[in-house]
Amino acid sequence: MTREPAYKLDLPHVYSGKVRDIYDAGNNQYLMVTSDRISAFDVVMNQPVPDKGRVLMAMSAFWFEHFSTSMKSHLISTDLSDFPSSAQVPEIAGRSMLVKKVEMLPIECIVRGYITGSAWKEYKANGTMHGTPLPTNLQESEKLPEPVFTPSTKAEDGLHDENISFTQAADIVGLEIAELAKQKSLELYSQGAEYALERGIIIADTKFEMGFVDGELVIADEVLTPDSSRFWAKDEWKPGTTPPSFDKQPVRDFLDGLDWDKSPPPPELPNEVITASSKRYREGYEKISGKNLDDWPS
View (cartoon, rainbow, N blue to C red):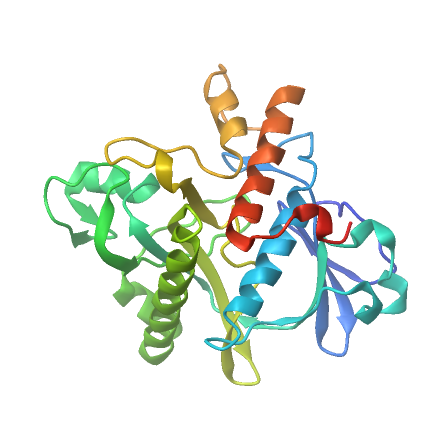
């Protein structure tokens, strides 16, 4: 399902997902605009979360630069002056980037450093993670002996991704590409997790998007953001519990307390829930980057 874009630009509109609007910028380039839309349980809420789009863009730009010596990205520029003239509008400053078109891999490159979420549910049921046996007696949110590459399918918008084995991923993209994606995913996760931990943030797991530009595998879309990763405060982490995360946690907590069947239309979010989520996104960015969001374009 393609949604109406949050921002109207005088460029061909390609696609709108839950959060991002994509436009064709010509010259084999896309312009990606990150809105303040927020989804929970695969349903887009009616109200946006202020500054969420700027946080996601600022965080991605930070990590793309941080990882630039390890792996190239699709990023060309986040500077409005580098965009096509028809897209140089103040409304998208700080929430947009000009990128190279990428031949995307049809799998999600997920790395888990701690056992939580769907991996924890599988482990409780079968003692496995993506079909692979794990040590016994692990607790929820416990750190794994080493980070694990756990790919998934890339579902159509509105559907759920399906956890798959490495062998299944190799069947989809080929063994050589699967091996390279695994290697780079583990490398980037380990680098990012170590960097964040020094700043008081645990990156429990993350999802990388990768694809090819001129025959070279690059990272694309977003990277190590609160929407693609699970961030926990180091001082709030304790095995056997589920630490609060630096993202839409207040929204999820509010919705979990309602008699709502997790299908559209979504319920209205109270102002205090929206404000709390905005604060969590901002705090995660500022802790990791060491930068003030107010200094990022708006």
